Length: 376
Image (cartoon, rainbow, N blue to C red; front, side, top):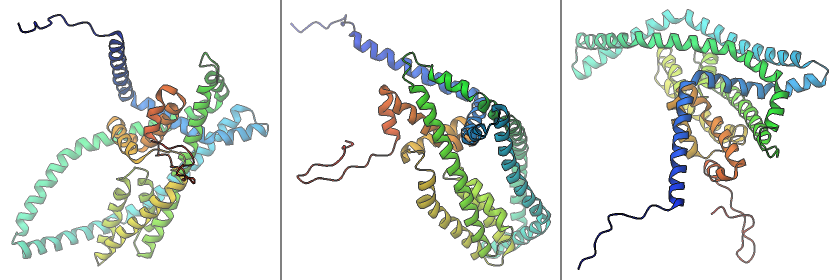
């Protein structure tokens, strides 16, 4: 007789049920974390930026305290120095853009002239009349204007949110510096074992944040100088303004440098007689990006955030989807902080390993053995 099928299979083993339960709990924790981060975006971005600035100004605040300054005065002076540097840079850029705005009518006339010459070329080359081109252009401009109203409202509201956040950041930074002793005691007592693991993680995060922000500012300064020199050599108008703008946009990974190249290319096309100047602008951006990617960033930023390229790409996409433009900017340091946490927790060390750079393989000794540990 054929074997009778077992209609009542044996129940799963306890270890299988436990593994399934852990998987479900981890999945629910991830979903809950992403939901909270998305809903509290403004608050978390505010705390993150304020924390980075407080880590940056912490050594200066401590130095003032060693000179006998009270903690509240040292924290206030640190925040004032931060505000002076920020508004000084903002004033410089604002004055440059004000000068640029005075020349907008001239640039508009040049743009109209370029459009007319382009329409004449299309009519001669492809037998498309200027009337047909104008009708198509008006249709596209009307569609752009319809969507532009909503974009303008979104931009206005986003600008208001950014300004409100900028106003609150110095206040948060002041209180973080003022309460640094309490935070240190809190983190040192956070674990029952009292082994100082949490405090060590926070100190490592503080050092990473400080080095990352210093590195980013150094890269922006270098690129502003290099791009400005390149644009000055080309004889481009507003060379310093365009160089500084391109350097600031470089903070946005991967797409920022080429966004910064759009305006200089357009200015070159409008103010120069030859299109080769626009090609020269692209060459300047390409050369400065080569120098930055191969010499500047690896030295001043890469040493602080040791994240491999694949993890960087995944982090940029994930945080960009979660927080938009701000997510793209802070994706790398946040991922570096996560790696520091993973490296300190034994059960999460494999995740820290997969996020980091591949360890270097040691040199071979005589007899075929290698010095150091093999990562495989």
